[in-house]
Image (cartoon, rainbow, N blue to C red; front, side, top):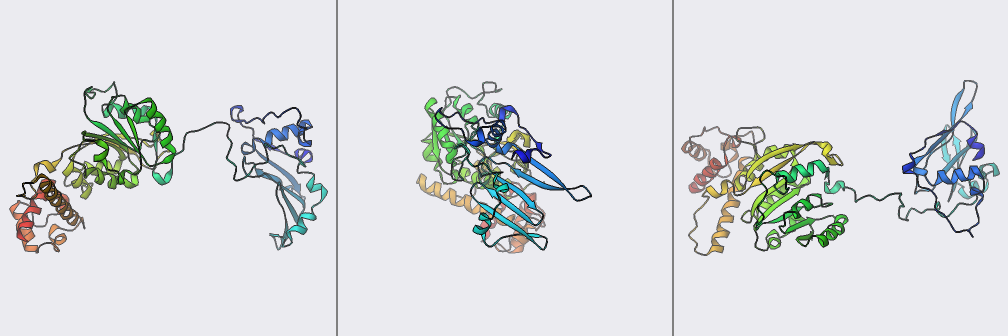
Amino acid sequence: MPAMLARHAVLLTPTLADLCLPPVYPQQRRATPLESTPIGMLQVFILNNLKLFRITTYEKRGGKGRKRARFAQFWRNVTPFRINTSKSVSKQTTLTLFRMNTYEKTGGRGRESPNRKQSERSASPRDLSLVPTSLPPYFLTSRRASRASCYTVPPMARQRLGQHFLADHWREEIARAIRVSPHSTVPLPKDDQHCWIEIGAGHGEITQHLLATGAPVHAIEIDPAFIAGLRRLAKQFPNLTVVPGDVLETDIAAIASGRRIRVYGNLPYYITSPILHRLFNFADLIDEIHVVIQTEVAHRLAAQPGTRDYGYLSVVTQFYTRPEFVFEIPREAFNPAPEVTSALVTLRLPGERSKLQLGSSMESNKDAQANSSRDAESRFLDFVKLCFSKKRKTLVNNLRSLAKPDGVREALGVLTLRPDARAEQLSVSQLAALHVLLAGTR
């Protein structure tokens, strides 16, 4: 290596804050040949910061001054380092700590010698002199060993779970908007009897704002990497309960234990709709839902009839809730930054559902009435889904499997709607009225 350093070299040094100094060993440990000289000490220092350095040397070949790479390697802090030396144009010997491969050029391409052991024995002393004969224990790493680091970091976001963490400034903005910050314009009352259910608590940033209200907080978290930290937080706040698991499989009614519910969640974009549908199943117990979702989906939730964003998800959301687009959140507010902008949306319950009569029930039992009401709602939502099955088609065409075209035109006439009306032009109440009229004709 001293011979190598004599050539043209480029050394990219890191900042002092990023350097990992070699550990101090007991006095009785004998210094290795690598550590016995000033250059050897420098090599030890470099080897302990492998990932931070790149050393490249060049050797001029031919009369035209063409440069040929003599030694080039990105250093890494886990995998063993590799030194490439070129003894001649026709042969390149690759030496590593644990293996030595010899490549021979054949027809312009490098090919590994089939006799690997013979190639290892044929390595010249000159090549072997570039590899230290002895290395200190802190360099002999293994791929299976845990990665040592100069500093510790919190658990990183998992892309498969759609995790994006908010910056400090935006946490406070959200806390004010959902009225859990002392700086909110109209904070929640102190004697509030609601409980909070947080979907995807993560590191617990918004969780601490919710806990400050004094209300019971149930933090649902599916990622085991964050559960331990949330349980440590629960030791500081008795009103926090950590609920490991998937919100799509969680019994929210059992968690609330008879209390009215407020929900907050920074929802993964790819399962926003399933989570909302899951929450709507417990609409009788929930008063408010505050979610951070993709901006495009937020506009769809609050879209009005006749607009481009109005569709099935708009009708379902407005059937159960009264959506409000609060504010947009830029991509830079998250770590890691998502590919799209986000928005905070507040859904207040009840929605149009409380004003509509989807079917009459003569049952005297409350449980039977509730089951009958849920069946009627399910039939209505299936009807809405059929109406929007082909958004650019008219209702007469989309409802052919349900009613005859003349019957659909007649029902639209009763509601003073055009016979060529499309589903995107009807409000929730108009769709409910059309559903009742067509159900009476079957």
